[in-house]
Image (cartoon, rainbow, N blue to C red):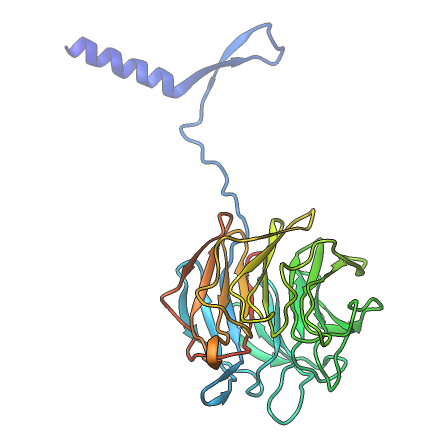
Length: 343
């Protein structure tokens, strides 16, 4: 037994020290070389989502200045100490993931707003940009080409707007695109396939719209998709995207409140409608996404004007729907969303 044990030890030692490999001249000779005792593959680092934010809106106490934060992947909810410069609803949000999120425009009850609040990640401090939107407006939509620029389109500044303002990162300078939306409209939604194109869908001009305008990066040319939303809709549907895969438009109002979610699959831009639906039909909701993980629809207005606090989660890529246990701090309509989403 002792001899057998020693033989096993000798074999193990030999195996750990040497391995047979080809010599410098292939297929001519072999040699024994020492093998390192261990080797660890270098870590592969992929961008992951950090948190999503729902800001502003209108609850039972009036317009809201607070910002709720949903931390991924556990989906816990906290409320930022930083708030919007003024309480407002009917605003829009976009983000330069890993850097900052932006809340644009809205209505504070006394005027339509042109200001842009910036939430810097990860500390979540708030500053207000010197550049503003071209005009004070509400009921606009925004999306972003990560690390490049954000875009705010449509809305109402006393009349419906067709223009698209561009905020170039990281300096946050503002220009206005030469291309415009196909028609002046408000109460629309937006989402983006970062690095490729952004999309503005739905709205009212004043008739409800089913069309989707596409802004192709980086030239910022505008085309209109052959595919349309499943129904013409306004009253602030919400948009979010799993960048590189698909974008989603959920909720809104056509001849009634909508619980359906339309999916635009990249890059062909074909439209399907999910079998999963929102927990209840609703308009005036908000959305954001953790890229490659899940999208979230929060708040909104349900039947009989009921305000909602719930947050529905669409898990990628299967597009199944669950509802979070955490809710928004208060039930509210017309908030907006954006995310440090790992794009």
